[in-house]
Amino acid sequence: MNREPGPGRSLHSRLRRLFLPAAAATLPVDGSSHEIARGAARLHLLPDLPLAADLGRAAPDFLVFEPGQAAAGIHHFLRLRPGKRLALSASAPEHLLACGAASGLLDCGLSIRHARSALVIRTARPEAGIAVRRLAEEDGAARALAERRRALRCVAAAFGGPLSPLAPRAALSALREVNALLARESFRAKDSRGVPGSLLDLPPDVTPILVGDLHARADNLLSILGSNAFCRGLEQGAAAMILLGDAVHPEAGDALARMDSSVLMMDLVFALKLRFPERFFYVVGNHDSFSPEIAKAGVRQSLLWSEHVRALRGDEYHQELARFYALCPLMACSKDFIACHGGAPRAAITRELLVGARQDESLVREITTKRLRGRFVPGGYMRADVRRLRRALGLANDTAFVVGHHPRADFETVWMDVAGTPHHHVVYSARAERAAVFTRVAGSFVPQVYRVEPLAEWLTRGEGAAAGGTTAR
Image (cartoon, rainbow, N blue to C red; front, side, top):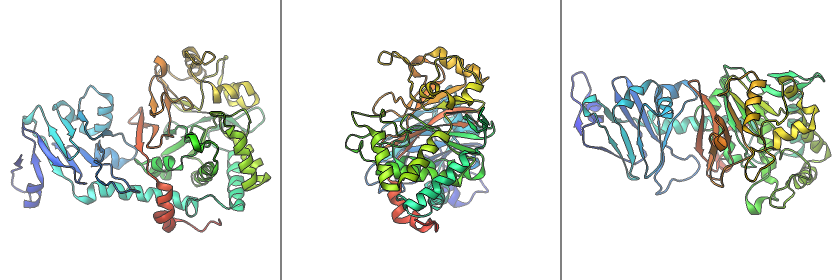
């Protein structure tokens, strides 16, 4: 590589900024961040470094994004994993979203290969004048880590101390406050009883962050909150996070019958609702119940959950938690999405019926428990039901319909165009190593996947203990 010439630049700048020749540019993977530029167009390559664990010898993923969009708020990015190659192209919608104002780089035949110990950058058009430089620490990964720490301190402060289950009295007080909020919750038309209905209608200027099933994995929720500009969006009122139910009940074998992690998860959910009352919402799923019918692998989880809550927190808390489930919405929508836990109703539907869905138990079951019809789900909903739901809400045929409840496989986080149904997607946020969301970036509704870290323990031991407030525990 040749050093960049030109008067008016300091020696430091000339040594750091390099033109990309026809031969590959090789950059070491050593924790450094890099910038690729062509004129005013810039892309950043940041290693996705962990907060809570030593990276050791493992090579990090790299996140590729346009820095101006990232500075402005919630943004899209491309993830480059070790051993993989990223060939940037203007014909790929997700590349256009991630590059934003740097879309001029997409017609340069630019590729980035992650060779584990090095990044290898090539261009098919060396005459395009693409330059590469190493970013200063304060502009690269260190800055990103500082933003993540700040976001998680905000969560710890909302929780009021170390992330461990609250004392019974404090837990009951928090839950009562949450239920009082739900009884007058914003963005929900009232049903015929005069109470907030089952449909959450988010304003079109609020960016949604849809989180799928969490199944008692508090680390997954924390990892999402500490990523992108999600927490900043909640603080500024520009974004709203919507959990699509089933935050409780572990999914992993030996843990199926253990409910302590579900207690912590709901304490965290309630703390976030109190911190962001008009920007944090919970849409109930089939596991959000004390019904003895809810079971997994022969384990009656909801019955165990009922017994555990009563023994740990008492009858009054148990009653308030049942009331929470009854007060929460069943579905959320806005100009470009519809979301619920289970699926589209099979029967004819109207907006009014969705608002009053709590008065129809069969409708509640369909929204929270149904899956798309298939070989092993003969009684599920169909593509026509999804189209009818969009029409009932006055939304276009290409409006995204996002659900949880039905992961495609044991390892996937997102299932796009479910079973060939256009614009119908599944998001699942309870994997041990990865958590997925759907969000809106530059007018497009997109999935994003984030690495999960043991952040509850990290916050409790260090950052959270320093950031927590004085709430009685």
